[in-house]
Length: 171
Figure 1 (cartoon, rainbow, N blue to C red):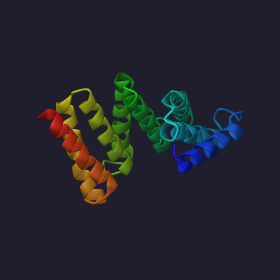
Figure 2 (figure 1 turned 45 degrees about the vertical axis):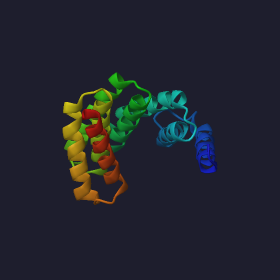
Figure 3 (figure 1 turned 135 degrees about the horizontal axis):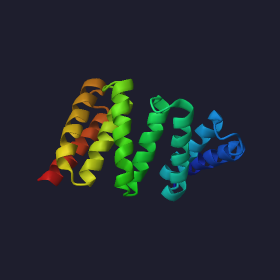
Figure 4 (figure 1 turned 90 degrees about the vertical axis):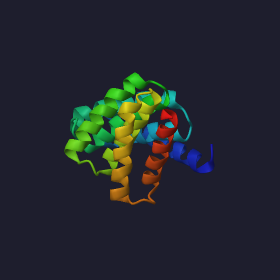
């Protein structure tokens, strides 16, 4: 773990300690739980500790803001991504599907959040060997990211990489 990662994790843990006893639906507590879950996953590589926090954040976000709220959709994508990362594809799939359908309806197809979810769902289908479902999503994600973000944007390059992975697996 590098110094910035240790610092990020330490700050997230300190912030969580300050607010963890606040009411469950306190926005500061919710944000601190989300930040700690992200730091645990990304900096400490502690998916087991991150999972219940991401689950709680999504549950509370649904209660407080509803299923169509942008923050709820980001929380849904975060939890689905962690499930995908740990190989729990059955749990990830409905979360990605719900997030993508709702994001397309609420913020549109060209939103960076929508495009991230589309790309994530395509990669989930790749991992499960459902290439017929992965290919159209990966293609659309790449095309829209090129149009919206430009060919040199890091997200567009990620989609290009994902298309290469998909084509390689399909060969």
